[in-house]
Amino acid sequence: MTDAARYRSPLSTRYASPGMQRLWSPEHRARLWRRLWLALAEAQQALGADIPDRAIEAMRAHLDDVDLEEIRRHEQRLRHDVVAHIHAFGDQAPAARPFLHLGATSAYVTDNADLIVMRDAMRLLLGRLVAVLRALRDFALRHRDLSALAYTHFQPAQLTTVGKRAALWLQDFCLDADALRQAADTLPFRGCKGTTGTQATYLDLFDGSHERVRALDGRVAEAFGFRAPIPVSGQTYTRKIDSRVLDLLAGVAQSAAKFGTDLRLLQHEGEVLEPAEQEQVGSSAMPYKRNPVRAERVCALARYLITLRENTAHTAATQWLERSLDDSANRRIVLPESFLAADAILILCTNVSAGLDVRPGVIRRHVEREMPFMASERWLLLGVQAGGDRQELHEVIRRHSRAVTTALADGGANDLADRIAADPAFGRVPRESLRAELDPARYIGRSAQQVEELVETAVDPLLDALQPYAASDDATVTV
Image (cartoon, rainbow, N blue to C red; front, top):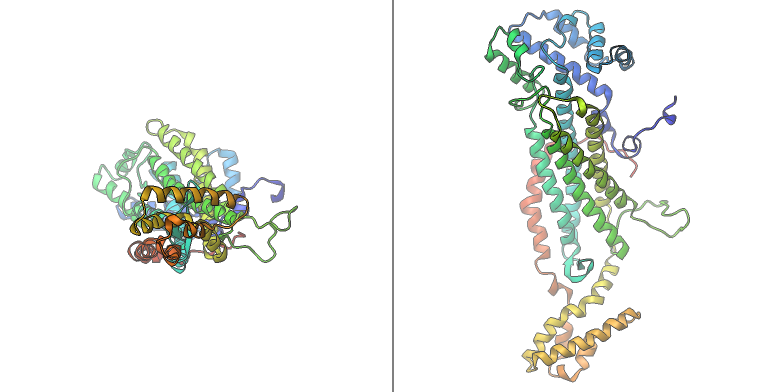
């Protein structure tokens, strides 16, 4: 059967990066397992176990020449994936065969490898987040003074600025990046715990020496760059770790979906549009269409990722005693798909945020359409200061506002300022004073300053801390 005749996840064929796919590939996993067996044997030898140098050397010589087809044949016969890998490794390194997997259970390689991959995948995602943060940071600063109509309930409200609105997206992604960085730095290793987590076999191997068993656990964790192994486990590490990691990935999805949804609304209003290629087709039937397809894809993938979070919560909640195997098939699907989805989402977010198309003319027209209504409270104050009766002036403004609203619905312009200026009730207020209150800059509050303060106090320090992750792999994906 050809690849074209098989189902393949769209996350691997269309959306996720080569780098993220490599991390979750069978080949990478197999190489990690071999490195885990080598690290175990080296630590055991260093702590006094009778493992000859030739066994260590044989393992080291065959860390990367993995034959997945040979492993598949072993698994068809043995019906056990880890044992199949042990046999294949032993066939290539016969001097190591008697010492492979010594004292270990399958979870030694499966769980520890999952933790290594998840940590490295989180680091890759941090690189993706750096790119998003930088793009949104620059966009927010560039447009921090550009007045725009704000919306509550998607109804016109007071003004904001284009940059201030982008700062809301930026802040959400900052929270995600900070949480993901902490998780990647503190993720525990399963280590060497044995069949039910008691380390009984290792205790036998080291003649009852608790000190050497603890040292073994720590040495193997250190070999893979982890601060420490998890203090206790059953056969597997607690699946709450998976659930907590998925909480973080779902948080990224939430931020991305908010960004994507807002952009879809703004593109409908014609104010801010996602980038579009020169020959991009919006519709097979309507040649004029320019649809927010990337923002829509962000929202679609985010919805999928958010639902996977619940899956890992159920897995953590339903584990039996020291272990049950109902998590295995589930995790083979959920963990890779979650990270591939998060990867795809952040690639899209970077592409979109780096190429946002702002339409100042449209934004200005929308502001001008609503500006007189916003100025009405200040006009009321001017009228009172000129000697008018507040309640009478309020009624005048209300009446004219209703008439203008009707006119706007029929395609007219907002001439509320002219109506107020011509009304005898406001005869003592100079027309230029009324006009002065239509300056949008008077209504954006501290929007520009808030953007600057967010960048100075939160974004730039975080970007500095994330600098080690900034140079991530290529993201050559069609977006």
